[in-house]
Image 1 (cartoon, helix red, strand yellow):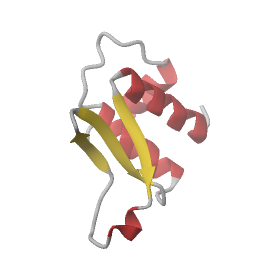
Image 2 (cartoon, rainbow, N blue to C red; image 1 turned 135 degrees about the vertical axis):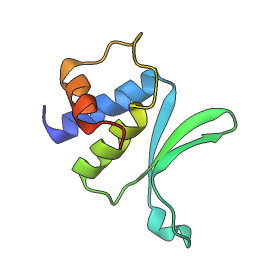
Image 3 (spheres, helix red, strand yellow; image 1 turned 90 degrees about the horizontal axis):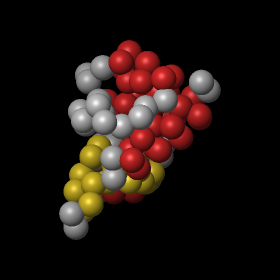
Length: 89
């Protein structure tokens, strides 16, 4: 699976878990900010630094998704393989 396809598949999986992935320009925050999962008004949002490489975005999102319960959700085999290889850290 190509990196851009993998990223889209990871975002689709996040959506199934009711996590919105939002790419933001974190450089303009004025303080040191990292990509990560947060909760805003009861909704889970993964804020992704849009300046990260596609590979890094895939790894960051996969690490987040690895912390979720995925047993009852269909995950595309290529995505499941990537999640397994990426681990949680």
